[in-house]
Length: 239
Length: 287
Image (cartoon, rainbow over all chains, first blue to last red):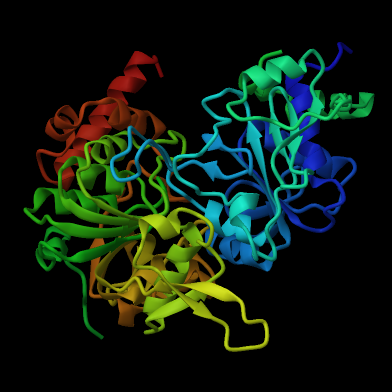
């Protein structure tokens, strides 16, 4: 078996977001978080609940085990037993996230999706982020429209938590005194300088930055043969 | 029991410019597109549209019928960004009330319950509060003392939804996995028009699916429209999936050309043009 690709490190880094979460709903958005959630469920997080992306709760092989239409999903969010991994068109140093529009909201230069469920997600259940192309256009000093709420704007929000941000370069958390973003691990082959260059704000970088952990042989086999045999991960993050 | 069946054009004739109109479905799923197409054929404009938006919003925006939109997103699902909605927003074509998905749901529930608002733990800290300066807050009267956003009721003049089956009295049935919010749209509106793939006898409804598939109750329904393939090109599971090829065509064709090619005639003309398009594609692919 060939060594792990960058995309496979990203899968592992996303999967790790759900470690020790217990019997909660994993809501991954995008291919690599979805592969990560299923991998976590098949290995170190066997109690996780998964969706088919539509109205069913499913086991990793697709067997339905429950019904989860949108209205129930929205209620589950406020119940809190869920950990979502969303995308971000922009994210800032405190974890404020934007998927609504670029530029002035009144008349945007570029209209995107809309706030979707980001405001309710971030005030009610852990919300992590996945960013497939780490750049200064995404990691910005200030987002144009706060959809997902960051630490500096969440004062008094009792259920607010952003466990991690995963990009194609590394893993980030908010384990700093002012809850600003910190480099938690680097994917192999990536340098601190490369991350700094691609980040539009000042990032906390510890003296020793660990490497994102390697997938085990069994995890690699599961990714390649069971969870993503079609190789969609490589279309999102190149090797 | 009243027979509420009527053609799509008659349903739309009961609407008027300036109304607040709710549209069911979600993204590019089970949208009442035959009713939207009828709306496009009418002269009705200046609408406040309330929708978990898909091509319903895109088309009405492109045709300049929207004065104000209430939504949490607009998407075609397999094509994440709705091009006609985007273009309209980027030229400042209408007013937008942008709220969170859950706030939207609680707004529908408030309207259906005849409440002025419902509290929701969402919005605080986000720019939803900045772009909706009219939003008020409410503090729990109990020991916890938590403060919530008081989402105002999304009361509507009329709702348009599409389901798989209905009877002539307006009992609507969904046979797919997700009800979306269509029953709430009907209950939150003063009038509601339900289009369906097929009108069946009442006794047929529970032969097609268990009683819990009877999503929409007739007392919330004003008109029933039989519209086979009426959600096209959005999905209407299990009757049909999304027509991805046609959706792509919609998303990549300049609006005037799409309008001229598919929306110049009535619904029969539209369905015939879609069939012709599908046949031509099949011939091209040699199938």
